[in-house]
Length: 320
Image 1 (cartoon, rainbow, N blue to C red):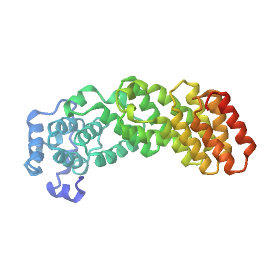
Image 2: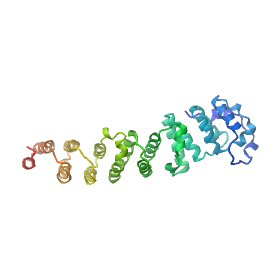
Image 3: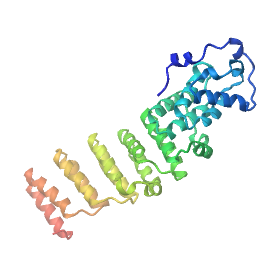
Image 4: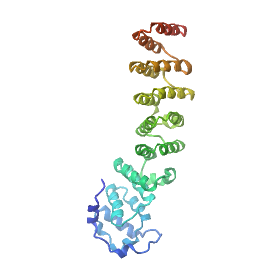
């Protein structure tokens, strides 16, 4: 979607150097100037702008024009890049934020990621809880969940996991629902880094927000356990289950049985036994399927003595 430097330069002949040497004022841009620029980009003809008045345009005016071009996203993109290439602007954080809001309001996530990457590279740490004022969402008709979820996903993609955790806290504080795609990316990043305690904290902090969103059809426990198992991090499987139960979060024995069975099938019987002992210790209560899975595995491995012990334990616990 971004236009090339050559195309931008072809839209307007080089402007005399003296124009850019004039002192900028901090006053609001003249309405006639803003109207002229807006109309020129609406018609995709920058030559409609009088070169003699361009010196009045300042970086702080970019947001105003972007607002006016909100319903013409292609023109807004051309204007933003034109300011960089032709006018030599070093865009402010405000300009970048406005531009990003515009792109996301049009569901242009690919260019949005590019712009976001430039923002992070240029401004390093950005307090989005402060810079994303309510007026921006009204101007661009942008949903807060869309914007914040996009940033969360982008932080994870760039490897800034600590910043993503901070942003997630902000979202929970503002009661902003996390989109499913962003939550998956966030949790996947945490699993990949082995941040077991953080995942459990995330589940605790997000209970209300998730219940208003998509928690009813999304099993965070299974997602995380599956991630740890795929990485071969069996100790983390046990640690995560233990911490989930310690915090009193609901865990379904059906899900536990699935992972117990997988451990047996991938020759991790030792860890299957450890998970079974955890179920006895912290819950959830083992079912007939739990016992039968382990008994079957023991029989296949010739451990008949242990198989009978499991059977007797199952009967004692009322699981005939």
